[in-house]
Length: 55
Image 1 (cartoon, rainbow, N blue to C red):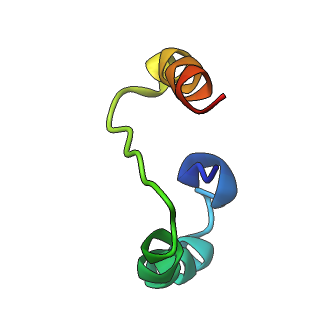
Image 2 (cartoon, one colour):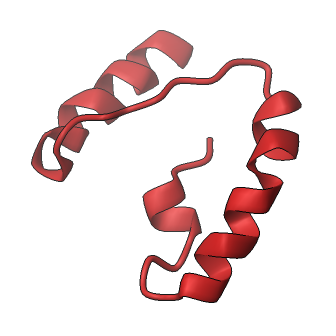
């Protein structure tokens, strides 16, 4: 499970730029990809859904 908001230092422009360049490789090798475009305050509901689906 990869969560960009956690895996990437959001304060570091250099790290974000490096990670963006690698995203094609990262997501291209993924078995499945789920994108969350919601607000941060509702992420708990999303993560619970993912846990139930892939548990």
